[in-house]
Image (tube, rainbow over all chains, first blue to last red):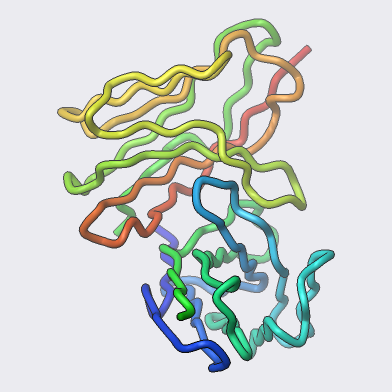
Length: 115
Length: 113
């Protein structure tokens, strides 16, 4: 089956620092990867869609300069939270899909805590 | 190795009938289960959840059943409505894994008029 991993699973950082989260498709090539954010007891919110080799498409209200997304290869996408603040503390989840197949495979998520 | 499996990629149900979506898991440490609904081009929307101390949780038309011995849960939608047509994801988490969500691959539900 298709497996998506995220690293790190949990990160605690100081306010003002930057944090990078990796999303990898382990056994398939992901032409498209999605980044979601989830607040406690709320639904996932789509932040951006990234296609390999091109710029990410951000959802309305998501700051492009704050949440940097790179999809440099067919198996790796990264989300960098720049100059993190306590309000950025959340659960970030990625998903990946193969070209031509609708199913999204989700990663286990990364819990970010900004002190 | 998929710890959460949704073996039916799609399901077609007549409007007004019951829709039953199934999910199996392998990790006995999972203690919290969730169902999400997702429309195309939108993020998943939380539907209903169940803790491992319960075997049933009901919210309006949606009921989730948990069978711990079989490591199986199901989502029942009664009666099914056209707006229920979407992809449904099952997810599981465990306290000792910091409640990271492990997701199934989803089942596409199609409600026929």
